[in-house]
Amino acid sequence: MYSSESRNRFARSEAGLSLSHDSREVQLPVSVQIGLQCGCQLTPGRRMSVNADSTEPLWMPRVAVVGAGISGLICARRLQEQGFQVTVFEKSRSSSGRAATRRVDLSLSFDHGAQYFTVRDPLFSQFVEAWVERGIVAVWTGRIVDIDGRTARPKTDQPVRYVGVPGMTAMARHLAASAAVQFETRITRLDRGENDWTLTDSAERTHGPFDHVVMSLPAPQTADLIPGHILEDVVRAVPMTPCWAVLMGFERRIELAWDGAFVQNSPLAWLARNSSKPGRDKSVDCWVLHASPTWSAAHQEDEPQLVQETLQAEFAQLTGSRLPPSIHFAAHRWLFSATPLSLDQQALFDPQSGLVVCGDWLASGRVEGAFRSGVAAADCLIGQIVRDSR
Ligand SMILES: Cc1cc2nc3c(=O)[nH]c(=O)nc-3n(C[C@H](O)[C@H](O)[C@H](O)COP(=O)(O)OP(=O)(O)OC[C@H]3O[C@@H](n4cnc5c(N)ncnc54)[C@H](O)[C@@H]3O)c2cc1C
Image (cartoon, rainbow, N blue to C red; front, side, top):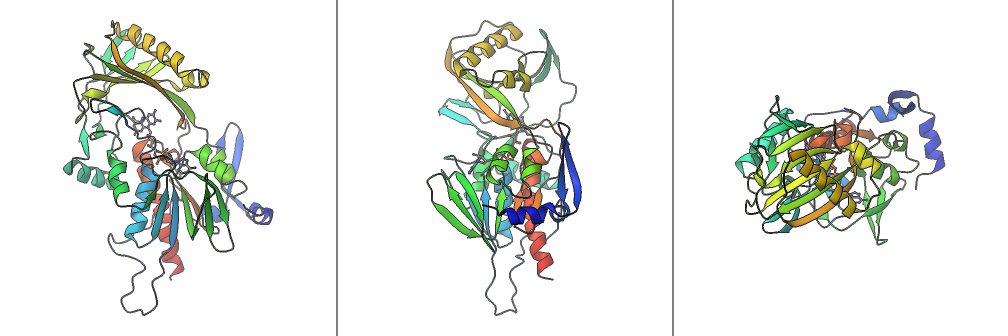
């Protein structure tokens, strides 16, 4: 995939920025740093490759984006707006990654990944405002508490919490509608030729050639796909913790004075009445429980049935509730849920090979981090084209 010669060439570069974790120190060579947080600004809506006076054919860089979560899709959209030819590859049948909704039937749906999102970044704020206007996103006014032991106290900080409507997948679905996404295509290998990239999927089909590749997966999954590349070590050094989610639908409403709870000192870390979110069916009382990172890691290999029963019992004890008969009951394990590190690299870029790495884990996690990282990844490539054209 990558020749040892190119690996040695990269290894000789002078070391620059470093990333520390578990007493391992990962050095990022200077050539990679050039692209970090390049954040170049282009006039919105103007294509860099269009030159009205030129008779030369337009050069439209070909980009493969691996992953159709929020980061990959916003990156694809930003590149497309600037005239890049973008193809997104997604292993699942639909987009959205960890901002996921499991729809069991019309009245039963569960946001079993991201629960809601908050907004600080000005560009993200513009997008969210537009999504609110179009009904893709709404404010969740659920009552949120902190629970420690059996005591529930209203949370003191109450940021505006947004959710996708009718599920958390709404934002990604909207972004994917204007992108060329190849679903059910799991990329298993990247090959860098002299000037371009070829991708291979799990059915041994090849895709390409591409001038650039953007990886937008959780860090461990990206690291596995770039063995020997200059960015592999820095990406592999980022740990991601698992999270068990339990999805429960009840015949009758559980009478509690709150809709969401952050839990301390328990196997559970978060409880949410999914049906209290805007645009959800209210006829079934749907709940999502998230186990803490520590509990999830300790029980990573447990059977889903055992996880369901254990966490449901914990929920009943915490809330002091006698639970009504359940209509639906399932557990889902997120293997790479979040990183405990607080990184703000936004995106990693190796201009020599044309590889960009993005994902929430590079920008403080969460939906907003995924958005910011996807934007930064696109801006790395746009910035390079602008520099090359000078
Ligand atoms: C349990 C849980 C709770 C969370 N709670 C919140 C919250 O309350 N608020 C918040 O803001 N954020 C929350 N998050 C985080 C939020 O979901 C993520 O930050 C965000 O969705 C990450 O987007 P992404 O595009 O970076 O990655 P992902 O969403 O992981 O997207 C990666 C995509 O790549 C695809 N893929 C993987 N491997 C391949 C391959 N080989 N080939 C092709 N495609 C591939 C995946 O299927 C996926 O669609 C939570 C996450 C989890 C798991």
